[in-house]
Structures are given as C-alpha cells and as structure tokens.
Image (cartoon, rainbow, N blue to C red; front, side):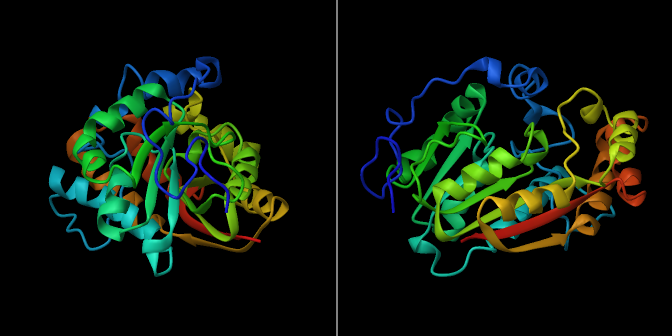
Length: 291
C-alpha cells in the first residue's frame, strides 16, 4: 500500500512530519497574492471560510442569506464525497487544494473516513487550516492533517491513498497532466479520483472571450482547461471508468443570485452566469478509477 512520507503506518501524519519546504517561486503570483495577503475567503462572494461557488440544490434562492451561502459550500463537498463508496471508514483520502481545510474536516466528521490529509501549495493556507481546525486536529490527531504540496508533487508515496479529491482548485493549476499523473501515482489500484471545478469550452476563442469577461482569467488566477483535455490526460496516465456530470444548473444561478446582494451590480463576478449561458464554461464533477 505504501506509506505517507515519514509516517510508516496508516495514521495521518503529525505536524512535524508534514513540515517540508515549498519554493514560493512555484506559486503563481496571482495565486500567491489571492490566497496570501488578500485571503480570498474573506471576500463578500464567500462566507464561513469555505472557498467554492456552492452547490445550491434545494436552497431557496428568493432571499439567500450568508447561512445559505455556507450551506451551499458544504453541499459542494458532500456532493463530491458521496462519490466514495462504503465502507468509507476504511478509506484514506487527500484533498488537493484544501485552502482553509474546512472541507477536509467536514469529510472526516461527516463521512468518517479512516484519514484525511489536506494539501495546499500556499503556506499561508496551511497555517490558516491548522489554526481554524485546531479543535478537529486535537479531536482526530491520528486521522486529520494539513501539509504543503502541489498538484504535480503530492507528498505521498506510491499507492498510499484510496482516494484523491479536489474541490474548485483545479482551475488554478497551471496544467492538469501533472495532476493526473501524480494522482495516479499516489492512488492504489482501484483508488478513486473525484474533481469538482469549472472547465472551459475548447479552443482559443473561448479562452480569449473569458479573459474579456472575467478578471480571474485575465490576470491568470484561473486557467482555461477544457474538460476533454483533462479526461484525455487521465486516460493516458492510468485511469479508467471516467465519468463527468454537469452540475452547472445547481451552481451558477444560485451563485449569481447571492452575488446580486453581495457585490456591486457591475462587478466582474456577475459575468460567470452569462459565460455559462453562452457555453464558455461549465461546472462538472468528474470521477475516475485508478487502473
């Protein structure tokens, strides 16, 4: 099965074991700023420390509250984590791009996985995750951990994990082939990858139009990744049974309705909904099995 680097058994690693250097030059400048000094989780678009657009199914959009916004973000994690089969108590998972780590803590608390490790490239986010989830770390010292790592350099040995998941982080990865390759390396045969994020329409025209509509694409925070390119990379790196499901109808209208009360009417984030309606991007949940 392999081991975690520095952890010779099935437990989650200790804080000392997860200390490893991360070259700041590997962090794209916009990512470094957005998740560092700017701390995106404090933006009006988000609430409660989570950083995702939310899965709004079943939430009344007539007058969404900050509590509804948090619920939508928690539901996004639940939508992803339900892709892992029972008995979940036997599964060791890692979240790639864990941010403040609330999703990894939810995974452990609600789904009772054997162990969950949150991985993030930004040291500020790992520091925040350990602080925000201090009680959970004390409650589950052998099952929950947060550590530095990147999508193309995961801090696990070959075949150690039963599952890898990522919630609204892959749009920041400079390229997805390395993520596919590393996920295949650290998963055991039969292990499951689950990714939720927004993918773009293929072709340079869609990428250029998104740069005009959305500041996050213009400044390089988000990268135009067509869905088919990622599924091809997964097939080539050792995955099978690849499935994709569009959940845009339960993401974009709810997000935009919340933004209507949270940001100025002309704010660039209001362009996500028309970009979806015009077919320039969509939100998907993707699952794949390691051969």
